[in-house]
Image (cartoon, rainbow, N blue to C red; front, side):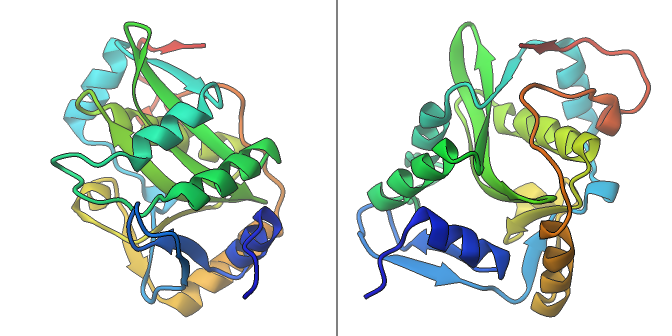
Length: 217
């Protein structure tokens, strides 16, 4: 049986395959190549009006790659809204290694010195592969997604892979495309150069030129 390593995962992502466990308590990791594939087109990203208002209030502090472990832990927790999770111990170990290699990234959302939400994913070239997000405080993961998309647009990324679509992501413009279409976009994206930022971007990339207040680090 082939041992799963960080380098093997990178090669899998490059051909459109990603890993998941059936549940948190199951040790085995399986690989998926869904058809259709979910993506969030960066050029048509949509922000609900109520979320725009919340972001402009600047009640959250946003950091990048400041506490990857806490975000990964938050994403792996079960709750009333998420009765099961695909993030098992081995996946945690592998993605920590990918973070140390510079492939994985996290966005942390803070309120009163506590992390109340966030997301993490993996970047290769100009492609970003969204893995998971979580919220302790309402809308925290949505704020993280807005910052992510603004960052990707600012830095020249061309593909945001969401793997699947769901009701939560559709409100932001997520769509399903065919596996063939996805792999064409993927091949283009991974051969372009883009660098994931170290801090929050100019939110005008997604909010427009209106004046707003936000807190970053």
